[in-house]
Image (cartoon, rainbow, N blue to C red; front, top):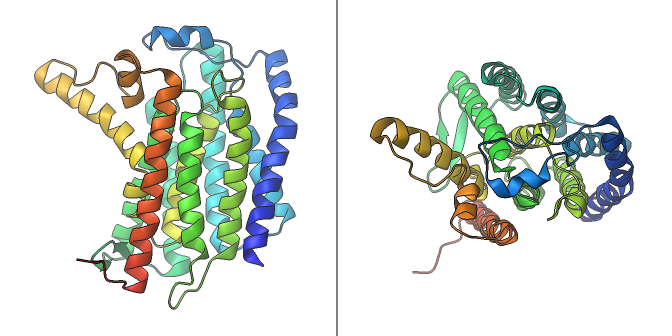
Length: 331
């Protein structure tokens, strides 16, 4: 029955987004809620100024409404739902400030808010599931104790939130990559783990997010009619990390979310290289803008990143299955 619930949830979220998005886009246009384009970004993006943004708020609303309508709230879904709302509020405020002033919230305030939500999420997960270790592919569970576990989880949640936000730079890019990541964890949640069993409600929650993202992409593919904004990117990144934690497969996020890792590392390396050597490593960071400046079309970059994300998700799930079942790989 769970598989039917997953499919129904995905379809309901997709249909809800497709039906509501035109109304939402029209409302945003009337309110003058349009994207402000950074002056130091690629010149090709200047024409996108004024495109309705804060699409993430619609995604959050559809997912939460359907989650409550389907009554999937339990210990497995409560934390990701709270992360979706908590960080979504932060992102919405940042979007609003950016629209009105052209500059978002101060980085320190955003980081403080993200850290508080992340610590609360890590604390709740640790106390409820009594987790004191992390499952490292190839090594099994590595016990690190409750305090270090909470700190590690908090660090990953904040990092994932910002990495997804940085990836939201091209039409359709972050939505598609997020879909493949959530599909991977949906499959993991459906797996009957020894001593734990499957997590059907968490799988349904992932399906709601996937369906909502598919509906969002209907209007976000190039040329975009609606942008996700920080309200969606920050919250969905945090939610993805929380889902990964609840499935006990948090380290796999480095593989499943390799696109996000590559994007945030491109920014880190760009800053470090410039400060240490006085020169840029990439033509522009984040990574997708580098490919823009070397001549790749926006649609080509998006599709190629989607391909990498799909392969990464497949690889991550394969590593998970091999680790759980003990299947011996052929020599």
